[in-house]
Image 1 (cartoon, rainbow, N blue to C red):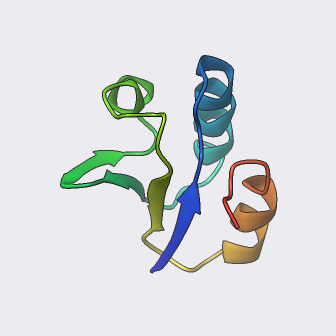
Image 2: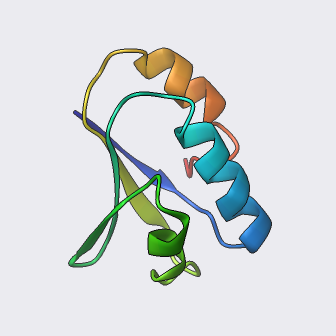
Image 3: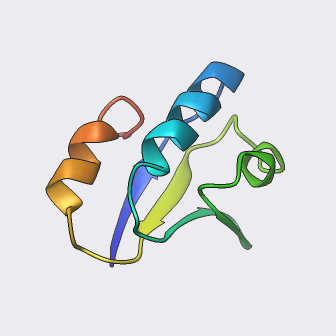
Length: 77
């Protein structure tokens, strides 16, 4: 399991983020405070406060390097 901070603060970023995430078979969760939603759910993402950074939890470590490379535009350092 790996946890990273991501920022998806616009409609276009949300669409691109979901398109990238769905390329992988891993399970992904987005955490905002006490709320946890499936990161592959575009409707779920829109229910969160997108003005804040979110925590992306990658459940399995397989393909981790490839996933992080694809998500580089969304990762907050």
